[in-house]
Length: 278
Image (cartoon, rainbow, N blue to C red):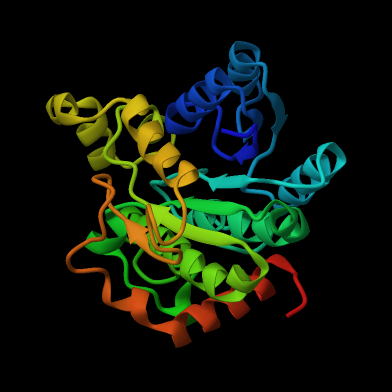
């Protein structure tokens, strides 16, 4: 396989770090970003990757990250929008967005749009990390993306992950004629620090309690991301779709995923939220 340039967000731990290690072993050029400078530095040291710490709770960090990437390459072969988190309490960021939606969707949307020229130059694949929480809890209401009602962490997370899945579909529609493909995939329920730092009590119980024995390893999640990264539209997967950790299409996809009008409206609202001109 030709050596590729791959950018992975959320790479300081868990699935992102495991993916970075696997790609580095194959000889790909890996660019990493994550919230924790110390953890990110360890992954960079282990893999020989280039790394830039960015907190997706601040869109200024996302813009600086995009500048950093552009300084290092004029093309990307793969962008893995893997960063995310679930937050016990409702918080509004300095950018005026509810934290869960910003970290899981708006930040990745902004980064992808800022790097659009590099993605087109590489004929890139954009892989968004999805979650079964979108099916269980997600139901997007564009008039309340900030979860101003009775806040539930699982609902906010499900909505945000549903937004990332819709974004992959919309990205496919807008950039397929320019050679960019996009898809989303559930990496699986993975044993990691996902809920330790940012999760609710129920999530901590699931990830750290007796049920944790049923969780998969980060390497399992990384294998699913790499399946998406290594595949091709029309042979391995279909661009614009969302896949399960079994690498198949869900038998009953979320009903909002087929709503192209909703996807268009979410795109426009996301542009407004991150300060991009339509």
